[in-house]
Structures are given as structure tokens and as C-alpha cells.
Length: 275
Image (cartoon, rainbow, N blue to C red; front, top):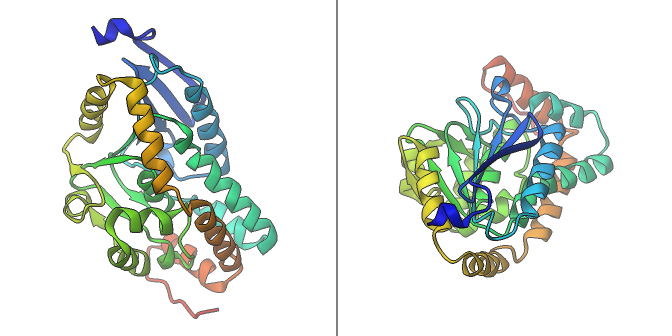
């Protein structure tokens, strides 16, 4: 009955091959599609992501009832692209602050979809990659998927709204521990700590089943519930994003940032000097 009620049972479209989108039985699946670099986030990906979200946003309630966000290949997203971060190291704080606000906004445009969004964390979700997962309404992770807000280990303050999302998910003290230590945990531990709803061997299939259950509910009521919940959750978000963009912009010029990126590329421990 539900499938017959939906206008488009299955349709694929994409603004760019770097982000693909498919709608099946009223559930959109948005896939970050740069598996060769673990779906690392770039300006190009952000632009394609925002365009894909814009196409979905125009769908009426009888065509779009829920959405899933996942990554192609073995990763959800490794976070910000390292070469792009080094470009920021060479730019000015004023320009970087604007660039970061725009960068956050493109990926967080996901929140403009008035349907429940489920992150299917199929593999590593690190830094900004996990922050975007935290911006989703629900999260399911593979038991061995590595997740963490790892900015400080790279020489950067946190970004992508992570200082806003984490306290609302696990509380201020747990959030501070994760942010200040850069701890990475697996999906099973993330579920125990409440960072994700549950761990599932096949997180994409699990998310699809959850989305199908949601899609069977009254679509207008679900959309109203999403709007109401997000109004509470997003109070103070804009201020947090501004603070994060400004603090990251200031940190991009530091020697610690250059050292953090170099250490990650060279697979060694960083030697931060505080400059």
C-alpha cells in the first residue's frame, strides 16, 4: 500500500558524481562518493552536497518521507581533506573565517530537509565527518566503525558544529572529554556511550529498515515533529558555528596545524610546540 501511495518508487539523480542521491519508496539515500580518499570533505563535495539537498528539499511529503546519509566504500568520511587544510594554513584569518562558515553551511544544509535523517556510519567517521553524522537526527554505526571528534590532534579547535552537537547528544562532560582528548572509539563503544542509536553489522540495511518504519507514519505529522525537535536542538547553533569558524581561522596559521597535518600524512605522533 505504501509503495503505491508514493509517486516515485525508485529514482536516482545526482548533481555531481562526488555526491549521489537515490529515492526508493520515499526514502532518499545520500552517498558521499569519493571512496578513493575515504570521502574526505572538500569545497567541491560541499557544493555538490548542498545542490543534492536542494533537489530533495523540493520534494513533496508524498515523495520524500525520510533520508539516509552514508559513504561509498569503506568509510563514512575521514573529515576535512588534508591538502585543503594546508591551503587554509597559507590563507589569511579573515578569509578563512568566511571560507569555514561557507564550508560548514554547505554540509549542514542537510538540516533544511524537513524529514528525519539517519546517518548510516559504515566505516570511519572522523572530525568533520563525524560532526556531520552528529547533525543527523539518528545514527547507526558498524560495530568496528571508528568515530571521533579529532580536531585537537590535528592542531585545530573543533568545527562543523561539533561543540553544539556533542553536548546535546551525550551531555557537556562526556562531550568535553571527546573534544579535548580527540578520542576515537568503535561503533560498539559509541552505542554504549549514546553517541549512536545502536551498532549494526550492516548499518545501511539497518538504517533503511528504520527509515521504512518512519516512512510508514503520517508524513505531515513526522515533518512537524522534526521541525519541533530541531527548533529546540538548534538554539544557539549559529553562534556556535561563528565561534568555531573564527577559532579555526585563527588556528590555521599556526605551526601546530602544519605539524599536525604533516604528522598524520607521515603516520607519526605530532610534536606540537604551542605556536
